[in-house]
Length: 161
Image (cartoon, rainbow, N blue to C red; front, side, top):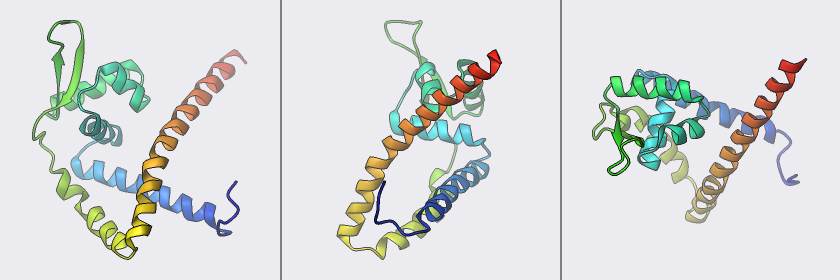
């Protein structure tokens, strides 16, 4: 455990995480999407084309729920399914160029306001913050995987009771 934290560090950090979650929900609403759909589009934007199975793994959805997600996003014109050039059985999901959402307009308030926050820090402090973001993102993803495993084990155990 880290010893040099303020006494209310847990609450401060929870407020920070809640604000991020609220922003994601609000951005999805502004785009006319469910938060899972918004998240899937972000994943595809960062990773590039993914197989439906990989999209399911990264979102934590079942394969059936992922199929419905892809159907919704494809129906809205945001993504398309493409077949592999040599193995026609393999499908990937990719963003449609200019996929119909003005993401920049939706996220611009956060970019602007967080830019103001970052401008109040020195170059070295900003470097530390971005080092944290770089290292914390995989930690959060790993924690998400661990939580999913624990929840699945709990459901299996509860089903036997």
